[in-house]
Length: 90
Image 1 (cartoon, rainbow, N blue to C red):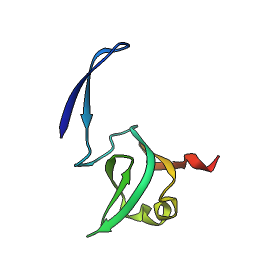
Image 2: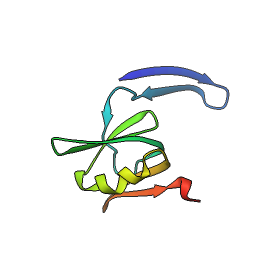
Image 3: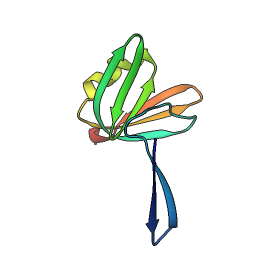
């Protein structure tokens, strides 16, 4: 995990974690938004590259995400599972 310290006039000192090389589990009520670049199912584990972040997802979601490759999407983890939205649909 790469930690970058950035200065910003609005927030003064901000520490940003760049998760570019690691696969990430979304926490409850956390959302990832960006272009869906890839969806990979290997050994029953689904990963999706959304923007610069690779996230773990339930394997049964593969068929829902494959048609969205190349589109801007959002994936939200909530207490009932995962919800997705196609932001480019509008």
